[in-house]
Amino acid sequence: MSEGKSGATPLEGDGKRILLILGTPKKDSLCHALADAYSHGARDKGHIVRLLKLGELQFDPVLRDGYDQSQPLEADLLEAQRLIHWAEHLVFVYPVWWGGVPALLKGFFDRVFLPGFAFKYQGRAHRWDKLLSGRSADLLVTLDTPSWYFRWIYGAPAHRQMIRTLLGFCGIRTRRLSEFSPVRTSSEEQRQSWLRKAQSLGSRA
Image 1: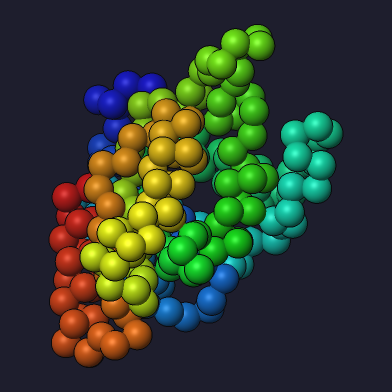
Image 2: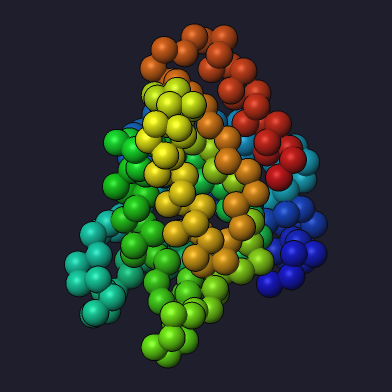
């Protein structure tokens, strides 16, 4: 996939194709507001933004038999795969719960980033093809834990999982990771500044 290519169709325009994935099951949260702000910033610069709210999709997040047997994809997951192929840039907005990504987001990866779609092993050797190469990603992450504590005491497990063992494994290069924390003790003024930051990030997509 060429990084210089942009615009899905002449009708959509020449902006970058961005898929924004909201990875929380909650119906309303700071993550929703951050996603909206990022989207506004990107659209103001002429980019084309599509949105997937995982909490509204209809799918089983449990990979029942691993990859030993095929598990038919629901219609919403087939559409998600189509949008991932369409996108040049992916934006994941999600909270950190218990040091990791929400179960819904992890289940989305389990069901959608399948062999033959996201990666392909090369025989029995410990080598594989990264089938989603050429795409970039931004991560907007909310935490109740202070950023320094999450990094230096816990080792930032959610960040390493997303950047290295999920996106990186499939060839998606994480361009920026932005933390918004601690949410639980934040003031209205702090949250408003976070929304302005998210909009700025979208304008620089």
